[in-house]
Image (cartoon, rainbow, N blue to C red; front, side):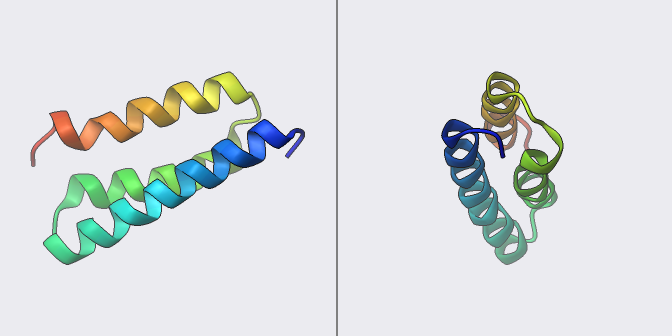
Length: 68
């Protein structure tokens, strides 16, 4: 974590991802479950703040457009 912005974005996406994981497990929905796991893990691999924000927003939108 090189900056405060990176830490804050990581916490935001991790929290939203945790919510998606809980929802996916409870509803037995695969798309929110895997999206949530991915949202929790991407801050470990992406070091650019703008890339993290962009990919995070796209991942948050996936369960709303993909119904499986």
